Image (cartoon, rainbow, N blue to C red; front, side, top):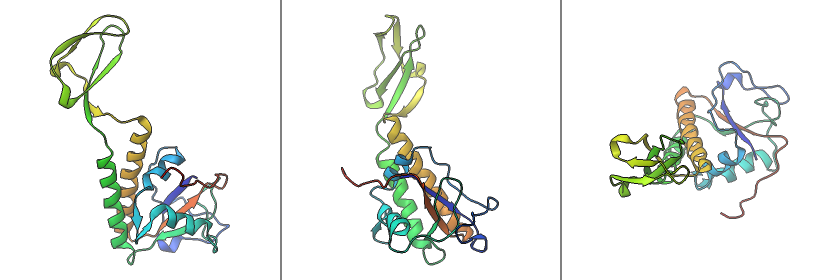
Length: 200
């Protein structure tokens, strides 16, 4: 399912089928992977309810959403959080998302590149020793010297990196919307199938 979060001033919120205005709009910069947004919210709670369950209840419950759509391909929006009453809960959710991102960031590694064929080699920071290895691709020697490394990066798969990026973007977005005193709205991709929680 593709969730889309946005925030506009309360006086700019309109009823469906009108579209929400493009001006004075705040949106998180999320990766174009609907499943990453789903996964980013896994394990996070809002007002003692799983955040994803709250989203599904708002968008697919007995009372359908009735606010304007954020754009083409998305259905009507619902209010996910409304300041000032939801301010403490939203700040807790933002903290929780950042904590999940830090916890799942993965082990750090130093990275080197073969000067001949550009093959990349990553070694967990805790295991780094000054040593020379033979490149598996071209046979050229690669010096695993700290001063020659390309830098440090997380040893996570690209999808988990996108999930953690989502968490950080959402946390920043939630804080900014609450600081402005704007409601946080959510909509879903009108063509997306309902995601299940299997495997959680």
